[in-house]
Image (cartoon, rainbow, N blue to C red; front, side, top):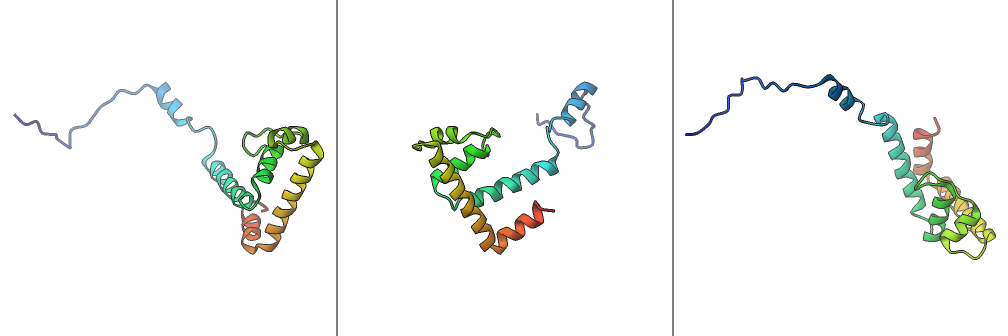
Length: 119
């Protein structure tokens, strides 16, 4: 005996109102805000890709790109294995200069920053 499925037959599943309301609020942030953050994260990754691994790590630690926690130059020194806090300060300063130079010399980056984040 072969069972057949009738397309016109309605399927009725009882749903609790509490369950429905919890499903609606499942997304913790606004999707537009989420996309803006993702675009910013992608742009930052593109900019940081031109730095040395030490410079990239120093900026990530100093400004909290990974975990949102900003760190002192002493913590950057320890995290990067540098000899002293002044060395960490110089590494961060040089990385920032390189980023400014990259933005200044790249019309594409400058345009992206102006269009998306400097409105």
